[in-house]
Length: 224
Image (cartoon, rainbow, N blue to C red; front, side, top):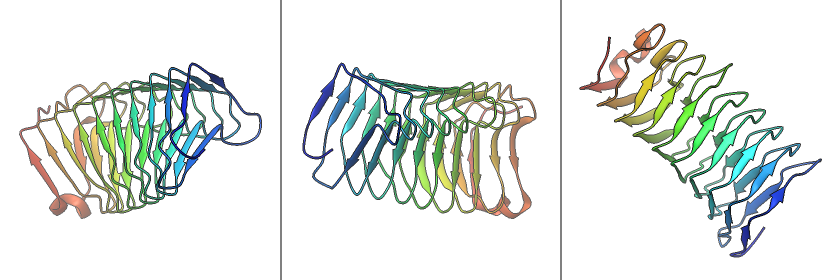
């Protein structure tokens, strides 16, 4: 998909690969009020420096992730329902960017949002919940991101997990009722955690492994 196409009010599925591929730095489509479902691969993949908007769209039951963002792409992902996909709700990798805001992300096969490989998205005001085999947000492999004002709850593992030089800025999130910790930092993970409510998680508010204890900043979090 190239240019500034508007895709609105469509039902889209694919029995073979990704349903919608968006690539090239001059590509800025708007995908809104659609249903993207039962693709063998990913629902929507932004790559090769592309931009664009996905909004008010149902993205569900795709074989891979609901949305993938890679290779310096920076779309806006907003007001969508992203659920029941085979892998992640949203996967950001290989220097992916973008803004992920005001979405309901739930019941995917892996974590709700996965950020890896030097990526740096903004993750704001989402509800991330109900992942029966994973956690809410994973940040790893030299990625940074801003995680702000999200509700992250009822995931089987930890609400936010950082490892292998993942370094998020997490502030003003409510992270509760998760099966392990509110926040887990391990294996050389970094991070700054400010003004988060981390109460009500099964194994505790926060766990930091020995090799990460001198790499994190904690300020004014509500803990148990």
